[in-house]
Amino acid sequence: QKEVEQDPGPLSVPEGAIVSLNCTYSNSAFQYFMWYRQYSRKGPELLMYTYSSGNKEDGRFTAQVDKSSKYISLFIRDSQPSDSATYLCATFGGGATNKLIFGTGTLLAVQP
Amino acid sequence: DTGVSQNPRHKITKRGQNVTFRCDPISEHNRLYWYRQTLGQGPEFLTYFQNEAQLEKSRLLSDRFSAERPKGSFSTLEIQRTEQGDSAMYLCASSFKDSNQPQHFGDGTRLSIL
Image (cartoon, rainbow over all chains, first blue to last red; front, side):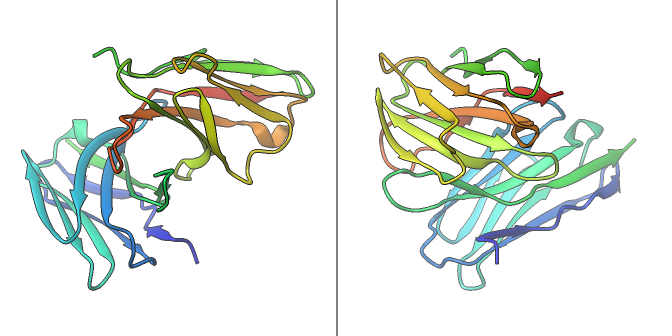
């Protein structure tokens, strides 16, 4: 079993829709969670960074963490064609290294 | 803030050749990470530096791979005797030394083995 599981999609939505992206993780010791956005042939770009359970909002983006069910979500409101990208969830693998453990990424297409 | 810079952006080489990639991290960042990403997968950790010290290497990093960060600034990743399976995107990330600081990535070097 992978430590972080993510539905690879692809997910296609019309412009203006609310998008919900989700990941599950296996290790209850994980405390910090991130969402990265990756455009084709580019590196991952940090979108959201959260600690423990709860919600964090930044503009059209909301990150949600539910540690009781080991479930993390990213919501995108009023989606735009420019949001079309791969969305990667990640967490720190523990220890002093703080290496990131990523999901496989979900490919999102927002249709104009 | 100039961000993390990686060169070259794309490298095409024949099987068996040696290749070297360079990463320039964000200047204030002490920590530097290398990851590898294959098509349809998330990045996987390869190795990590704090200043000039290489503190951890993944099992993915075979003895054909070597990484350096000689003055605690830029880093190089060398692959010797490249194999078809080395074809991937090699990503560099950097962060502040304080624990649990987020990592910021460069745009990667895409390696294609002919």
